[in-house]
Length: 297
Length: 338
Image (cartoon, rainbow over all chains, first blue to last red; front, side, top):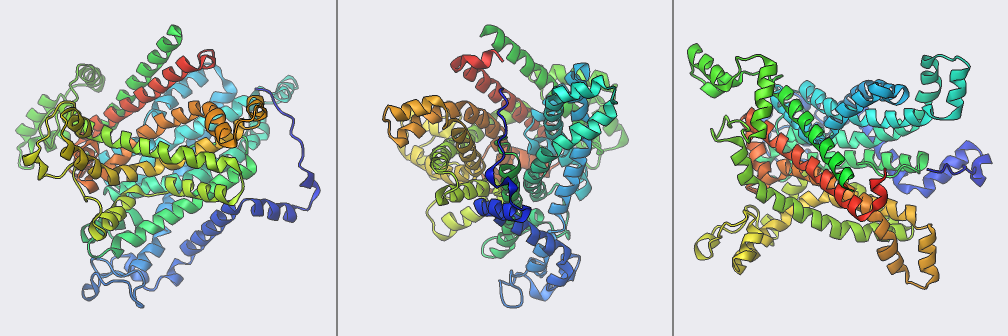
């Protein structure tokens, strides 16, 4: 591929704040996504202050308040054991989004070193790593996560491990591509000729060059991991009652769905809004930082 | 071309062997004891040992792997612990219903995704583009098990427009029984000229297919937009414009032509994803396919069945990717040279 010279946009001389404001105005979806993500993080931090009945996120039950519809007292209604659904939805921001962060941290911890090794060292290391990665990429992510979670005892730890076990290959591939493209550039050859150590080249040149696409990928993946975790919990393979996990809440509400629609509806909206917010943010960041690379699921 | 196809098939076979090894490894990290599950809850130690011998669990792991691989090739995919029937025959019974659902969903996704992607690419950054982009991201952010429940509540319980569950209305089984030929109800009713049954199967297909289509539709709209924006500045498009083609034709005919290869690669991808998504949706719609089978196996911790379905879907996914690769190479000779 021919490298097109990057021409600095005319507004490159403007102060940082002005440039940022212009970029956000040109990309309202990024702004909306960013604001929603900040809001979700704030809700997760201040959950104990926001939730009307913090105890309902745990083992509390209220046999006299079972399956009440939305009202001034219980905005989202109550569930089959009388817990306030709004409180559980609020505490849910501390379950699957946190799992997503842990999963992606594990995926990066495995994927970055393997990817850099494959891309920078090349040769048989590259062949070996990439063939193994290909096998893992031959499974749709939810499928293998599901099989793993199904054979492990159902718990949040199993769920996290199962998803992390299928997510790392994407990072190997991403980092390998970055490392290989940087390693082939003339200035790296110069570094080598100057006798600069491999470690230094990796840490000073290859990793810094990979941070932008990595950031974009992570922000795009958070939504995907949240959806995967919710799906596994919905199938009973993750969180167990009384954990206020949204997917589990949808599954539990399913048997009361008609006529008690609120049990399923509100936790589901929470999953949708959270995944939507992170996907908007990731998509917008990709447009902003990395416009050449289009599309990845 | 032949060399390209041969290399592709060889790679696919290698990947499938890898996939089988992965499912085998997954099966052997099971903390539970399959032999005990097989023998039943009140089995004696001797009975469990006998079950262990019968299931071949007393042999060393490499021997088990080789016999597992050999079994898979010969069509012996294990016996379901729950149904006590061969897993492969269970899967073959269930697969047509799922394929019918997924293929319908992909058709819906193309019908929705391509026009919206083109409209979006027509004036990037404008209101229509922003709305469509938000809509496509909404589609890929949808927890489809939830969407299934909500649509079922709305369109069948409240509005009563569409049936809630099943593949066709059971009443028709007496007046217009379905003759099984291919296993695909829609195809079978067309072949048999069974029009009331065809109407019923199509109506029953609508809701689950729309739910499964949510993710692919969003992805395809995004892909089409990105690809068309990439090619719209190229000389041949300029040439078409200079020749006086209307904008609609320029996008729909000339720019879209170059967008097809990546879109068809994405189709193979979402085909695999949608097969797995049926695991979440079929049970809700009481759809007698692989998804319901998988969900039931998960609920009963039926490991051979779970691994069988996993293997089947993974192989279907590899084959779909292979087919798309070969078709692309046949159409576009540049791909063969890569």
